[in-house]
Image: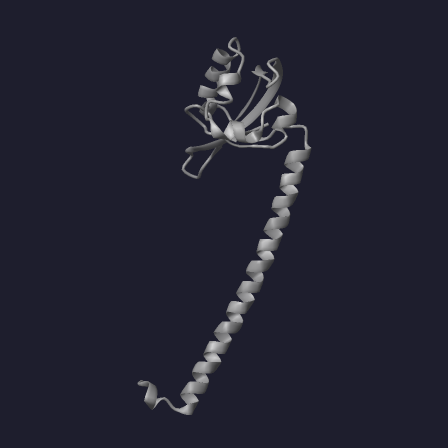
Length: 154
């Protein structure tokens, strides 16, 4: 129907439909804002827990150089390095494993897909130049197609 042919009744129905749609969009926007606030609270809570626990939480690539894609900020209090140092260089972690522990450790990592959970101990070079013993546990996460996604550990 052409604009000039619309009757007053047609225009009123269109306005009512537009008003109804605007009301629905306002309700959706309010729910979105509530979800954003809830997500922010969960994120803030999780960040607090991750930074206040003495355990370093990490996520790394499941193959290759096993570079970190996430590491909790408290790594600085444990090993002297800032989290960004692990994230910036994929070899940062691997290059600081004690040379005597590295062959066994990397053999175990290469077999990550064969077992669900792993635990091992190795020495890691602290920023102060000394080696510290670490107890490391991790799990390989897979997607629905059973492909390796990432390693999550502490």
